[in-house]
Amino acid sequence: MLLIAFTLIVGCSRNNSMEEKEKIKIGIMLSEVGLGDQSFSDFAFKGLMKARDELGIIFDYRELKDTKTYEQGLRELIKDGNDIVIGLGFMVQEDLEKVAKEYPEQKFVLVDSVSHLKNVTSITFKEDEGSFLAGVVAALATKSNKVAFIGGDDVPLIRKFAAGFERGAKAVNPNIHVYIKYAGDFGNAKLGATIAKEMFQKGCDVVYAAAGLTGVGALREAEANGVYAIGVDSDQYFYAEKAVVTSMVKNVDVALFTVIKQYVTKGGLPKGNVELGLAENGVGLAPIRIIAWNDNQQQLLEQWKKKIENEEVATK
Image (tube, rainbow, N blue to C red; front, side, top):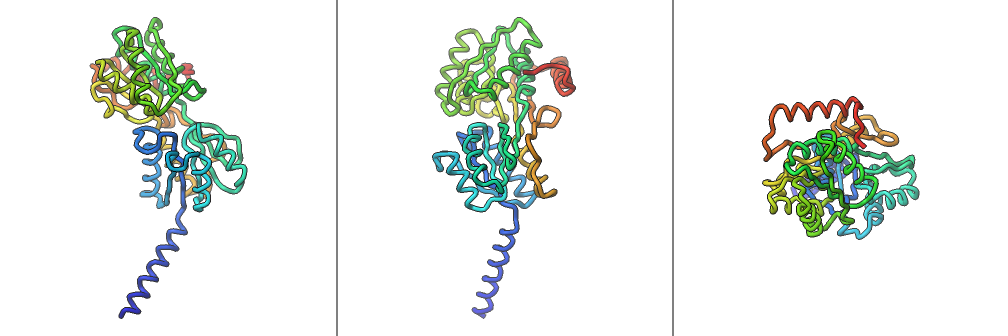
């Protein structure tokens, strides 16, 4: 009996091991802050969990706090035999491209920046489109005609958020004043609060932050000062429930699931750059809360959305 039981256990272990080997393995190097950011990394993780549950993939991840460098994390994921290695965030690009050149047969996905290497599929978003709508909401919510944008760093990607936000606000009210400041840090909530307070002292009563945890500090400072805020990447309402009117969401989960599904069902990744905007459900707005929001305002927002989707208005 013991021999039979042992044989069954060994047999089951072998079968499980074989099944695991046959499954598609995906590894992801998360962005700077990592899990718990209620933003980019958490959304990416959500997309991978959906792919695991619905497509049967296996996934692993690395965080910068553990690997110290993006390069080390990427190398670990390759060594572990992942079929696809994902680099999350524009800050990963330099290290990812360095490693990708050394492993030309390895498949990579770079999220939030564009690589021209043949073994790298890029996924980018039209942040300016979603930010334009955030600007429309800000212009309708402000009473002082002064609104603020706080960016994590003064780089092309974050400038897309700022440009779209300013254009959206001025499309509603050409005389609105949009204050823009870059923190130079995505992981400093205290700094975000300090910058936001400076903006409020200038009379801004709506702040839009695209700055990771630095932005979360701005949201909470808005709540402490009784003014409005707009979150980013995911629905950040729960960070400051008395302040966050809406959030400009980047549907990283949808993007990753879509790309992985193509790989699972068609045996290959998309080539080049996959760019997702309002029309592709790549960006959008979270539900509007806190402020009085009437049908006319909602119709106006929808009209601007249609104009953007039909390429009738410049957003950057």
